[in-house]
Length: 240
Image (cartoon, rainbow, N blue to C red):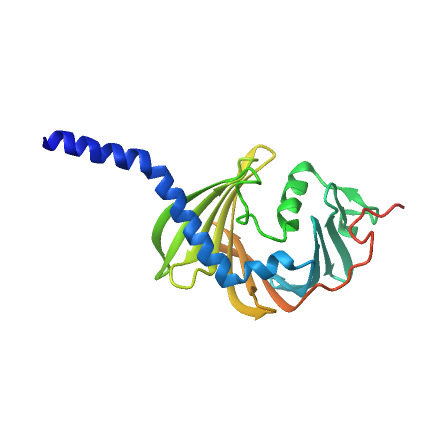
C-alpha cells in the first residue's frame, strides 16, 4: 500500500511540477508589475531620457527616445561629436563620425536584434508568451546578502536573460544575459539602482554594465519625461 501511495504522490508531482513552476513565475511577475507601475507603462506613448555614460574615466552625455509601437533612438556626444543609433520598427541605422564617415549606415542583423529589445517599451517580461518567449522560475537565491527571485527568460531567437528580483520588494536588481553575436555566445550584466517614482512608474536612475562580475561602465539618468511629443520621421534613416 505504501509503495502505491508513493507512486501516486510521485505521479502528482511529475504532472503538476511544470504547471506549478509556471504559475510561480507568473505570480512573481504579477508582484513585479504592480510595484513598477506596469499599468501606467502600458499607457505611455513616448519616453525621453537624458543622462551621462561613465566609462574608462570619461563622461559622455546622451538623450534616449522611445515611441510606440517600436521606435528607439539614442544620441550620444563623444569628444564633441554626435553619435546616433536608431530603430524605426523595421530597420536599424547609425551615424558614427568616429568610424570615418557622417553618412547614415545600416546596422548589422545582431545590432538590429538588440535595438528591437530596446524599442520594446513594455519590456521583454510583459506578455512574453505572445512574443514567442518562455519563462522559468528558478527559485530564490542569495545575491550579495539579499534574497532574490530568479527568473530565466528564453526568447524566440534563443537569447537567454536571467532576471534577479528583490524577494521583498520585487524590484529588478540585476540581469545577466547570454546572447548570440555572430554565432558566438556573449555574456553581459546590468545592475539597477537609485529607483525613483516618475508619474507612478519606478525608474532606475543608476545602471551599471559589465561582464563576469566586472563593471565596464555606468549610466546615470538626469531627467525622464513621458508622453512628450516627438516629430514624425525622427526615427527614420536620413536620406542624404
